[in-house]
Image (cartoon, rainbow, N blue to C red; front, side, top):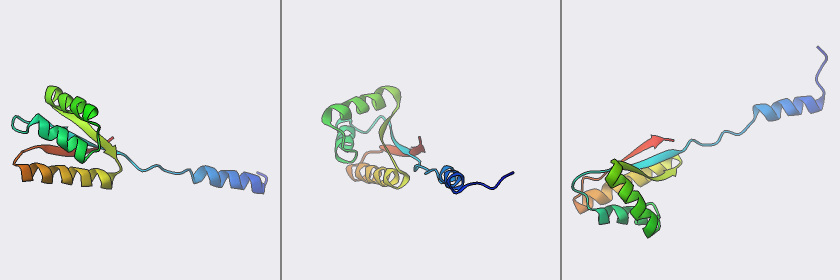
Length: 103
């Protein structure tokens, strides 16, 4: 096999160094029989930066289907938003649960 030219070697290196994009994680809010709909909408607006309209849509999905995606982030941000949600719920006396799952 003949030796590779400089251009062929550069191409091989470029193929091997294809960038890997960070994995994304979903923050999912779970329905319960205690947490008020208004509180969930407030969490979606304040913590996840939804508009009022999109927050209501997500809240209704959580209410009707049992869970809904509040947002999709890199792992560290997803975990931070999960913790903020759980702390806000505990402070307000609600059992709202938030889980993080890989997308």
